[in-house]
Image 1: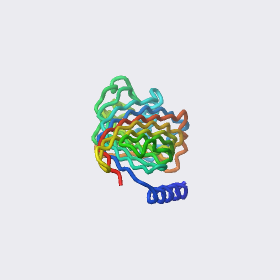
Image 2: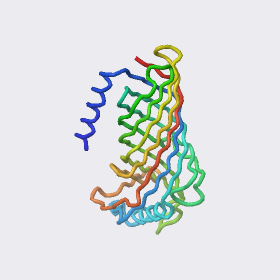
Image 3: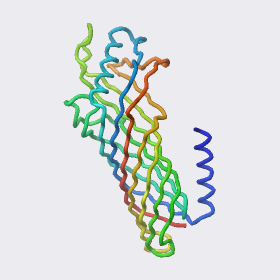
Image 4: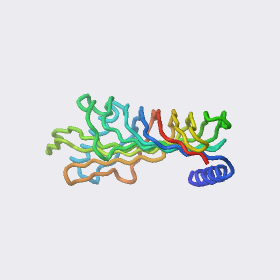
Length: 246
């Protein structure tokens, strides 16, 4: 996978060097819908019997409501030539509209550590590139990273009263998407742009999770055998900003 990404990046850079290039930056908006379920047992036993029970309770909360929807302000950077393109967009969600856990957390403000990263690299075509108005339409490979931190009310498990427990989850996925950009240049090299991108992610690259209770942090054993199934993430991005062409 790393070799494929390196080769793709090298071809992307080489293609840009041989073409007229547009770079666009500006504020953006991200909407993410994610769905996934875990199969198998996460092994939290190294943390002790009671904390292991907390880990099992966490799995039940995750699978009880397996979808998450987030809207977030973002910042986008787009770059494309006449054929190849790439973009990266960073978003910082403040609320979830559908909880992955219980009803009481539906509109809970997320912790400061939450972020969403979307990126694409691919190929397309730049229409009307000899006029002030340009329309670029492309499609390619997408990568998504989502990190969320949530406070969950566990209450009493075994002999311990957990009260509120923080659950941190980081997911990285790969998929396919499309990118549409409209530019209008006031001068030969400077203008404005607006764009829409949508990516469907279906391949899980990495998953990391932990429970924090006060100063105690609990992570699954490295030898855990948990399969994530029913995976589906869709990320929609809207962007607006300034463009420079050279």
